[in-house]
Length: 348
Image (tube, rainbow, N blue to C red):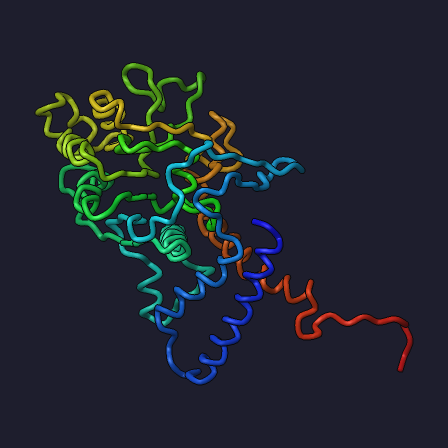
């Protein structure tokens, strides 16, 4: 984003914040309405947000002094925000521990677990970009692992949206200010792609660990982009019913063993629907910094299979970047005579 645009947006942000502060002073004893929180996200990220069709995206990758610049295709498909056509979806069988803490008057950010941290980051991301958001508390299966709730939950909601973006609680958007639309353009998601997932890491030293019976690397269901097209419901139905052993004999094996619904998708579903499944490199939307196998560094989406507390750290760093930018502006531009010069180091 051009520095002049940033300054104009920050100036507008400062004025709006003052207006909000004045309104808050008038109602100091009243709880903040949800709409006000939405406004806070919008105001904080206004100077940072990337346009869906912005030709480039530049960031520091944390491993070198140089900045990395990525470029969109010449004619990006998505040029305007999709807003409520995108659903950011959290799906759990577990309650949020932070909700219980809150109701007991004991909420403390430093003490909440990674599940709440991940969910909060997904919800905040939806607010920043104006997407729809849902947290689905699903009933557990009696005969299979809890992660098998994914196909049916996606099927129940996809008809109401153009895209569903699903993340496990231990997965995060690396850049809170980068919209889904930009990533769809970068990954060249076509209208025929029903489900997009990133590959898992693969190593010759453990060749069988993340591979199917044909030695093909699994895709990871911890992050999925599901598109509402003519084939999507058919794929989700086949996936959900896979353990019935009707269409896919032997699929019931994956009711409990690793990696449950993920293995079933990799072993069976994707072979019947190859052209409708987009597989991303592991480096793009899986793993996290420090993973050398398959370069799974979580370029856009990080999935913390281990060290799950880092979901909270990523969220914190994203929020602090947005919160401290206007503070930096006030210092840099001497707003309100904050910065004073001292010409002589003498006593008065």
